[in-house]
Each structure stands twice: as structure tokens, then as C-alpha cells.
Amino acid sequence: MTDEIHRLAALSPLDGRYRGDVGHLAAYFSEAALFRYRVRVEVEYLIVLSRAPSVGFVPPLDAQQQARLRQLYRQFSDADALAIAAWDRRVNHDVKAVEYWLREQLDRLGLERWKEAVHFALTSEDVNNLAYGLLVREARDAAILPPLSRLLERLRELADTEAATPMLARTHGQAATPTTFGKEVNVFFMRLRRAVEAVRDTRLTGKLNGATGTFAAHSVALPAVDWMAFSRAFVRALELEPVLLTTQIEPHDSLATLCDALKRVNVILVDLCQDLWRYISDGYLVQRPAPGEVGSSTMPHKVNPIDFENAEGNLGLAIALLEHMSRKLPISRLQRDLSDSTVLRNLGTAFGYSLLGYQRVLRGLDKVGVRRERLRADLDAHPEVLAEAIQTILRREGYPEAYETLKGLTRGRDLTLEHLRQFVETLDVRDEVRAELLALRPESYTGLAADLARLRDDRTAGGW
Image (tube, rainbow, N blue to C red):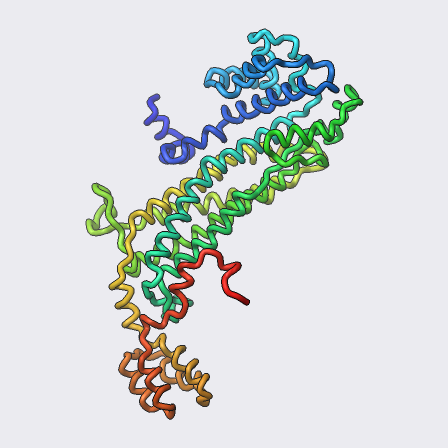
């Protein structure tokens, strides 16, 4: 079949309709990629064994031999993946298939003397957990963090540009104290930045300690080796955090932490998408139509906010998967059950829907512009939002029942600025206070919103 037919026949839209958007994740999460990462762990383990004098039975590998071994995963090909898959069908064990294939490669490379050191004293989970730790970390760093960084940059630019653009706020969907568009965008920027930092800073863990986490096979064969120190050093060499005390499996706690952190990013972005969708609906934002794009099959005028809708849907799918993973993966019956294996194989699906969501939010943001005149018109239509300002100034002056007075005047009524001015004229206040009240305007009643829009660290702002 052609590539197009493959996409049309794919069971998952990630491998079909959206393959062009997320296909590069296959380099980390496909079955072939998992084979490659397992080969990488096995090769690096063999090299470290050959460097440890206390191991003894593994001859040293010179620099050229080590380089040839590393080429097995650095130049891993489709043919290599197919060969391992053939072994897997034969023995019905994917990690053992990697071992058998690797032994064949040692024969081909003239390294037969090292065959019995391949997979020495390891359980499959020693290889699997380290392979997943590597592929998840590298997928996060190379494929997930870059679009999130671009999203943060775009939100920061929008917050700065619209820092002083006044906008009617809405609480409970009702007209409320004015804000600025930039301040509201900066709220999302700050939330998202904190969430992205949690994703970036999560240190993934790994273990290498044998069939039930006791180093039993290691220590019975080579009791003189400090296997705990060896395990720590090897896992750290892979840039993972070592865990010594486990059952057969690495407990997945750090992976669950990463899933929760990604879920938080996605929840914040769903919130952003829904607000932007509403701003488009209210006419606060205008979308640039894409040439040739159709918004409706029957209504020619439509320019739909499809990017934010698409993002919301895909992020929701990712949230559901990530939540399941963070709850399921840390749970394993006794010393091992296999229920985590099939869940881990769906990490790429969760990452794929997340990435697709990030791309769609970026695309949507690139299409929108702020309609400042519409924001101003909406403000002008709701002068009642000045009731808060008036009653607060009156409280300062000790005016009796200030809140109740404004409540009776404004609640459930259509007011104009002139109505408020007439009311102010009736107040028994000093002339300078009356002038202060008459000078109030919805568009200028935004407090510190413009400063808040430019704030970049709300954890250290201020001098208290």
C-alpha cells in the first residue's frame, strides 16, 4: 500500500490523519524504537562489564570494539528491527529476542568471546525499565519541551503586547471588574511555565538489581563485586537516577510523577483553549482565515476556532491516558505482574495526543488578533462595573451602608455612565471625593493589571 493508503487504513488517528504532525515520536515510542533502546542498554552494560576489573570473566573491549558495538544501536535499521521481531515470534519474549539477536551480531563482528556476558545476571525488567527511562527522557527533551517553550514564548509576547489593553472581566459569566487582556494571558503564561518546569525537572529513575531486586544472580556468581555500587554507577552513566530497593520492577514512581506533570500542563492548556474559544465567540479575538479553508459545508461566512477545539479534544485524550498511567503504573502485585507492560506501550499515544494538542494551540494562537475596539465597546456597555470602585471609595470615607447603597442602585438594572454620575451628584461627600468618583471610567479601572501582565515571577514580586 502507498503511504496515503496506510494513513487512511490506520486504526489510530495518530498513525493516520495526524501522522505528519506526530510521526517523529515513532523514533522514541515505536516497537522498533523500543528494540533499539533495549539494544543500547544491553550494549552499554556489556561495555561496562568489560571495564570492571572485579568482574574478571569478561575480557576488556578496546576502543574500536566498543565503537563497533555502539554502532549496533546508533545505526539500528529497519532490517535489524525485523530480525529481532523474527526472534520474538520464535521465542515469544521480546527481551530475550534482543539478547539472541545481539549474540548473532557478536558472531558477525568477531566478538564471540563476549557472547556469554550478554544479559549476564539480568532480568528482563532490568533492560526494560532502563530502556523506557531513556526513551521517555529523550522524547520529553527533544519532542515535548520544544513546542511547550514556543507556546510560552508566544503567550509572553501576547501578554506584553496587550498588557495595557482594557477588557471587561467576567466572573460567573457576568460582567465584573475590568482587567487587561495581557494580564489574563499572563495568568496562563505563569501557570504554564510552572507546570512545564515540573515536566522538565522530573528526574527519571532506573534500576539494575536482578530478578526480584536482590542481586542474587550477580552476587552468587561474582561475590567479590560491589554490585550496589556497580548498579548505581551504571544507571547514572545512562543519566537516570538509580533506585536500589525494588521488587523485580522499577516502581515507576518517577514516571508517574512525569505523567502527572504532563497532565497538569494539558489541563492548563484546556483551560486556555476554552477561554480563547469564548473570546473568539465574543468577538474579542479575530481569526485570520487560511486560504482555501472551509469553515462550514453550508455557511460560507464561518471561520471556526477549530485549532483550539482540536487541541481541547486531543489534550483531553492525553489527560485521560496520563491519569490512568500515573495511577496504574506504580501498582504491581507482589514482586511482579505484567499489567504494566501493555500500559507502558501506550506512552507514545499519551505523548502523541499531548504533542498534537500543543501544535494546535500554537497554530490557533498564530491565527488570532485582538480586536481592541470590540473590547472597548463591551466595557462602555457595562458601566455598572464601577459600582465596586464607588462603594470602596465611599467605605474609605466612612459613608454609611456604602455597599448596600450601590447594590440597590445597580443590581439587576441596565445602567449608563450618566445614571452613575447622577447618583454621585446626590451623595453627601466632599467636593474632592465627588470629583474622584466622577472621574472613574471602566477602561481605566484596571488596577495593577498592566503591571501584572508584565510580571515574570509572581513568587518573588513585592517587598513584603
